[in-house]
Amino acid sequence: MDLCQIHADRCKGCELCVQFCPKHALEMSEERNAAGYHPAVLAHPELCNGCAMCAQMCPETGIEIYRRQKRARQDAANQG
Amino acid sequence: MTTAMNSQDGMKKQNGGSVAAEDLVDLKCVFERPQSLSDKPFHYCPGCSHGTYHRLIAEMIDEFGFMDRTVGICPVGCAVFAYEYFETDMIEASHGRAPAVATGVKRALPDRFVFTYQGDGDLASIGMGEIIHAAARGERITVFFVNNGIFGMTGGQMAPTSLIGQKTTTSVDGRDARATGHPIRVCELLSNLEGVAYMARVALTSPKNINTCRKYMRKAIRAQTEDVGLGLVEVLSPCPVQWGMSPGDALHHIEEDVVKEFPPGEFVDKLADPVKA
Image (cartoon, rainbow over all chains, first blue to last red; front, top):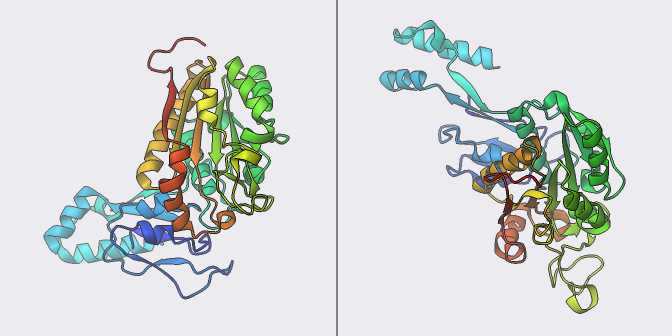
């Protein structure tokens, strides 16, 4: 599961999340949502580290952020 | 979705061999919609900070655990439908009269957390008399003030907080100080009054400033809960549509121009040495 979950139907296409993402992982979609806006999408999920800058800036509270627990991160590192 | 993805992760790890059962749920939600915020989508324009400020207020209500004893007072202006967005009791006040309504609620029900949410057209224009007297009386209420320097809902007219030279639909050549006066700095004006316990201004232009805003809001709420006096937090908000800018450019405009007229910072803080007002 991606660390950054964007609710496309809440998005109004203000692009603040895209501008504030330090990893440049977000882009604006070519598709339109139910309200007719181009929503933001996580175009590069491999770059996302769950810093939540996008969610802090989102005026619509349309982004949820998940992070791996420390122990799970260590397991992933051992396997990887 | 969470369950399905977690079970996939779990399967992968079981194949790897060294996984305890509790690691099956390894993702933790660190940022989500606050409980006090309803699920209804905001009606605000794209890039407007009203939504951000609503979320911060809801976060504070959750953090302090006030959800079951909060009464919010809505303004007239862009945030006139704010009662749709909070899962708490809300009252709609007449234009500018939110501090007066909040005074009544707080005096009748002193155990409630009472806040008003007001824009600059509401608080600094028609409601200036109400907020001055509420501050002078030292009412135990918390005022969340949104300053975007323009009347957004009615079509972008000049507000008392519009900058000199700012073009609006009622000042098409830019605001002229000779004809319409100078911007009113609400925090500087009210900070002279003894009843004010906490007052601060912050620009909602970056994640760092949003964290600063949280810090200020905590203190403004403590001013009420610790019975010190009136707490007020003013945020400098963009109005991209009525300013005629993109949301990103509007934030740059605040950081470059608006903060020169409205310097951010704490103006009154009587919490460290809580003198009874």
